[in-house]
Image (cartoon, rainbow, N blue to C red; front, side, top):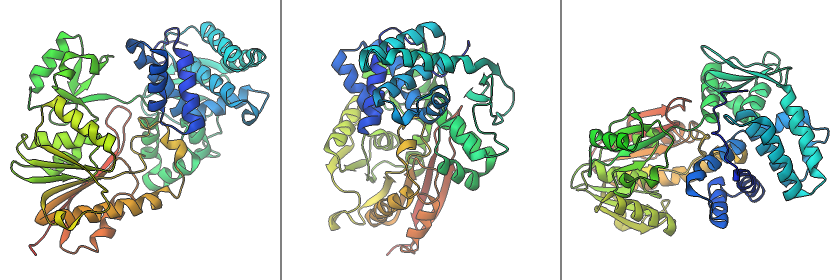
Length: 469
């Protein structure tokens, strides 16, 4: 079972961290990133190993439904009757066995059996050993594929060109029940799979599912206030970091495993870690020198600092957010990047004072959303969504868009953006609100579907005021 690419080799000592973080995430509904940070701090975990731990933990939560489906086939006891911590040990073990690179399977099984004995109870060890070894016996080999992946009852897509083949049918047959097959094989809830099949068709739905299970690419935005694309690529090359064009102006894709925040160029503010999809909204707004610009949902500051950068740090950029700690991150990022044109204020993006109305040349409304375009990064999101979430979010999103339109001056412009691919949060919502604002119209809009080998999913609409009041 060589060549499994979804998780890097797991160094000794990581497994307990991973199990603890996953258990806290699932049991207490905290974000996995926060759970990992707590474990890293509690155990004084070496920074050089944190990336590997985060990779494995993210894969466990991201592929949770698939892992549970396969474990259920290997366990004589229904998973719902297992102690939650024991189940999380099994989930992490199954994930490592199926997806980790260059990890001897006997060593993995032994480590997780010992974890079950130590973290749960001694009697759990034999059960864990039986389940994991039974799972291993169902695996036949890895197979490289050409062309598009075709759903199968025996194949689990590991990456775009590689599948893990089982000795027997472990997933529902796609010709009999395609949504059930895709739910089990891709770990996305059936109701969301069915929605995407209807909305996007089979081919695009499969691409979205592949992207949702893929390891996110790492891209950076070059801080042109301090350096150039060419100069930063040279700095990365000196640090043995391979790069390629990110696909958007002043973006670079990082091709080497590296702790970017540990590089001197990061501390020097020469780049900001950001997916390409998040760069579209500031570019669409097109901030200019001497303009007054409002970012309504600013934290943690990626888009805010991009706005300031595009205006050559010569605009007045106002960053609003309801979270004081979030605004502290905006200020921290602006300071690191050497940006001086940003001013922050705590406030509710759904309500602004009369003094802020018709004041700004340009307004960015990057609203809270379902995150369906970024499921590979927001690994908990797929498990916490429900069919009614889009209607509930749309109420908040509509209020924020109304605020943005009210804050823009006559002749101004507004960009509305999400990291969702759902029309209720995107184009349908925008058109609904514009019926209340007849002096505004859509100047440009685009939905970016997530791709396994490309950026995340997103929606961006630029709205313009058509006449002066």
